Image (tube, rainbow, N blue to C red; front, side, top):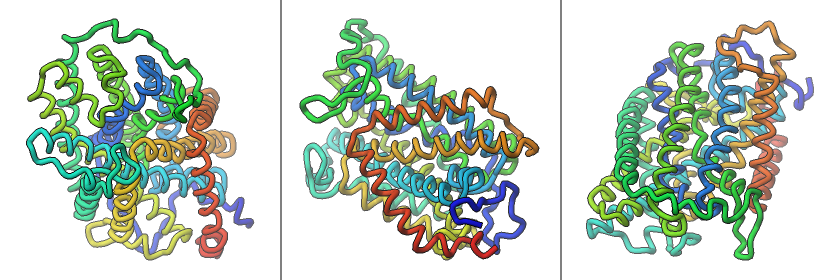
Length: 470
């Protein structure tokens, strides 16, 4: 069988040589994992970046990005319940389109999850520094921002520290870290509700004028920044994904058919509603030109309206709760590495599981890699690069869903994507449009990263794959 076309079986393999993850998660854990992953830097920090690119029409950008993610979420729900195995889009693409495509999607997921962890850590660092400065404990600029930041520094030390702390928590155990995550998610949602309550009295419709100052299509302006509704959508798309991290936990779900459907669809719907409400309140309370450049826009808006104590509390909520996003994506990244290792495409030692059911080696490796990136790369560049990997994963999942619908209609599907013949193509088309709207550097980096990944595959994975010996 050619390495290009050999496929992973859809049905679970009976024996994994002791490399099996424990089933410890129920649907509340999965919903919390999804909400924890989705609500984070996107609304706490990137709302300012998006407003700077689209003006008040950033709320349209949120709606477009959310719609594309909704189509993708329906595809993910079907594939996750059909194949409740670790690996997410990598596993689905491997089964639907073959090993080579599976490898490309796997490396795209590695790009997504690792860079997301770093991006959220940098966003967290901005709120942590703002909170520390309000208490008179701020760090020197050289230790609070990387070389590419504004202002530039030496290393973003808070970002590095928080990633290492989350890595340690994940190594304690899956259920334990999921329980901590659930409590922090509640805290985070309450903080956003408090922001809306305090911001609404200052709502001024004049702040929405001009509504679309940079137009709809993405275009690069004289300062080298891409602007327009679609340019913002391509960046704040980062704010919506996270439900795909749930699918990486499929193998650890107690009742995959029920729990994964509730987790993926439920977390996506809940977060879409929260985002639109918070974005509307923020834009109504302050003109976008005022808060767009702030590293902590929600706290900035509250301070501007005299809610100094509330601003401190919002910053504190971000400091405490944003690590749930890092936790969710680092969890997902370690499971993708784990699945690729178990399939032989990466060194088999990475898929060793300790007595607590945790792939400790790959979790530690992921944490150290993400910490190194977070220390030296600015937020917007990180968010865009992460989006490229995610869009590729979404496309792979949608294509795998449609291919298996045609080739394997006999398979039992606990959840079926409604109108799959329409939802699947819309997910693919929407993701391609968002990818095209990304900065040129981001697209070049994505293809270069996957080019290097293909070299690794041809030299190692192609030969070591478990399917190559069958």
